[in-house]
Length: 250
Image (cartoon, rainbow, N blue to C red):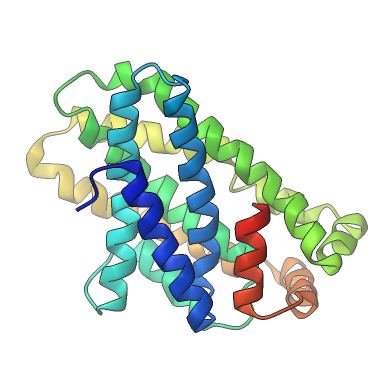
């Protein structure tokens, strides 16, 4: 179904536009992810990766896990617990944009990325992928690092809160890209070194662990919850407005 990165970009655009029409917070992650995918495409075109053909394959396999989860969820089909909890949060009022993004990154990077890396390396040596694996994570990290500043530009309340307390930064550190990247690589190694008979069990065990982090993202303690509530009230515009702003600025 998805033969190229352009197919992925177009599929993400469909989700973004559908989310804008339906005022659906799931469009926040789709908007950020499309930006990441475009950056990866630019990197491939510029010869940034060691093996650009393999990187495009990894990007497609990786993105397909998110796209399949998104569409299966809307068809009431089973999805991983990590994605189900992330998608379920879109029905609630209080999670701020940042929390929705973290929920998506938690499921996609901490679970899906390791699976995709192991799958792409099935016929070769996983270690050969390590440099490019780190490079794609650098692309992800560069964009994620911009999110806090971008949100501060869009929502003044967020900027004010950041001046008053740095606890939001401490919260973000717990879900840093480096930790997510390192965990994803170790998981990919475990899958690559395992046997076909226990892969499903390994994925289920990892999914349970990753899904457990959802509670930390949504319920980080009373002080941060109070901060996020103030930020949520101060977020300007509709969900659709925020998706479009995030798509333009992320």
